[in-house]
Image (tube, rainbow, N blue to C red; front, side, top):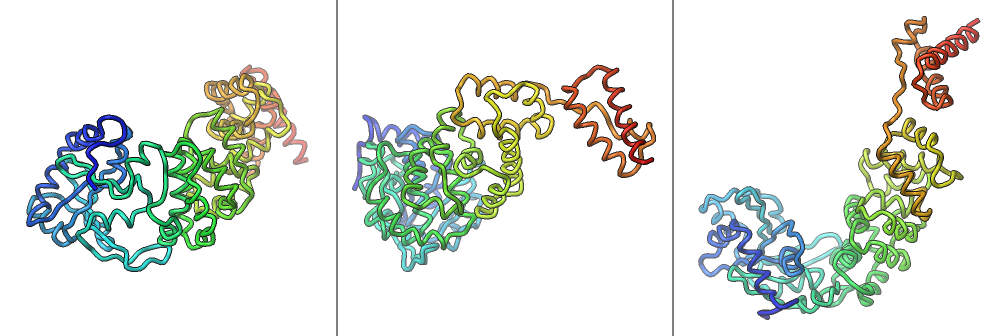
Amino acid sequence: MTAPDGPGESANAQALALLKGQPGLQRIFAAIDIDGDETRIVGGAVRNALLGRKIEDIDLATTAAPPLVIERARAASLRIIPTGLDHGTVTLLVDGRAFEVTSLREDIETDGRRATVRFGRDFCADALRRDFTINALFLDKSGRLFDFVGALADIEARRVRFIGDPETRIREDYLRILRFFRFSADYGEGPIDGDGLLAAMRARAGLAQLSRERVRAELLKLVAARRAPEAVEAMSGAGLLGPLIASAPNPARLRRLVEQDARADPLLRLAAICLETPEDAERIAERLRLSNAERDRLSRAARVMLALHGKPVPPPKHFLNVLLFRHGRESALDGFTLAAIGASSSGRRDAIDFLKTAPEPRLPFSGADLIARGFSGRAVGDALAALRERWIEAEFSDDREKLDALLDSVSRTSSAANR
């Protein structure tokens, strides 16, 4: 079905703007669209053009089989990156931008993780194998829109729904359960589609088939989405989130965090749902195959949360300085932000401003100072640790006499211990 008009009053104008803004597209069309073949823009780029959103990747669908795409691109002196050939995808680099060109496909067999496909020439059949209606719009080189699945109406209504039978779509790839909630959070308005939610609940056992890496990627995108709290609450209520993170999720904390802090920090938002202790950090990192840096960030934030337990909001400035000194600025901010979820806005804001702007206390002693006083070997490290604690007790004084007195006290303590 050709769609001359769509959301708003100028769907075609928006679509044409997409074409005009990417001159590399015309080179690809000219190279591939010969001998009766046709190439169209498909999916997210068309959707985002109609919604006035930033366009990240531009994907194309073509009637030409992959060998022909490669042959014609080479003849047109286009740079070819042969990734995704098993799925019929050829990446072309034009004017410094990558375009994925995928031959039209039909699924022959699916196992919930990957599909066996055959190549075809039917744009409608290709549309029907995609996940959501809003991802199945096609745009040809003249700027005409093609809508085979009611995508334009769903974009107009800000509605995310599966193409055809939701359970069938999910069984083709169980990651679509997570994608359903992510796209609902990013593009949807109002309640999550009931048919899709019911299908996701019925198919939840299939989530166990997914690799932890794929789950991690989708969850981090989901929690960063515009309406993440609503989607996470729906997932949790449907019993879909707990098994993924191996704990009882707390979606209410995410909602309060988003209300207090609009930054779309995926790891911090994930932590709001399920982080309380350093042990939680280890469990989450293992469950989702987080990177070492992500694991460490969660663990440090959890240690700050424990240090803040029972403290008022805002804590005394000396205590905030202790957090900066012991844990560093990022961890102090992370831990306080999580620990203060739900606290009064003024006290929380004052503490966050302090943690963001106050200079981090730097221990004004070094190993050289202790060696000059006769310390050696392990005693140097032990003495530095003692100095750290005594400098905290001295409220990070920079008075030279007080600092010398701290060195003297550590020296006396060490001498007494060695008698």
